[in-house]
Length: 115
Image (cartoon, rainbow, N blue to C red; front, side):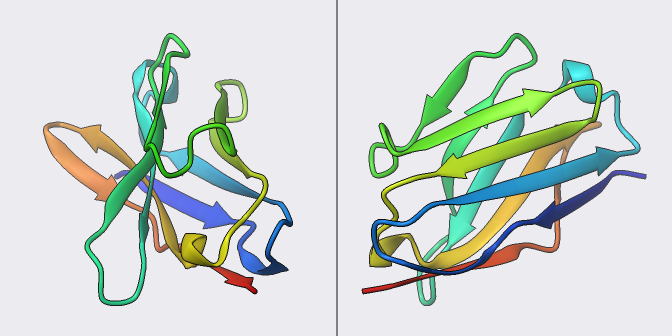
């Protein structure tokens, strides 16, 4: 059974930084593409960034050059370093992966950026 547990969210002022972590279990982590999604109030969930098993990364235009996704296969953990945060980055951030053709989600972690 896939389990994804996010941590690291919180309240930060605009221009600040946060690092999110997602610890995975129940999957062969090293072969999985891992993604960070976010959902702001009243909006659809969107991909913020993902990273393949080989370390290739992909970012939404809105976070490019500010966010960095990385992974530690030994710890089965994926990270999202968020710098230069803006109020529009306020959202619940979810870790996600595909396993057995089903998308699994963590419980989410709230990120709130005050202006």
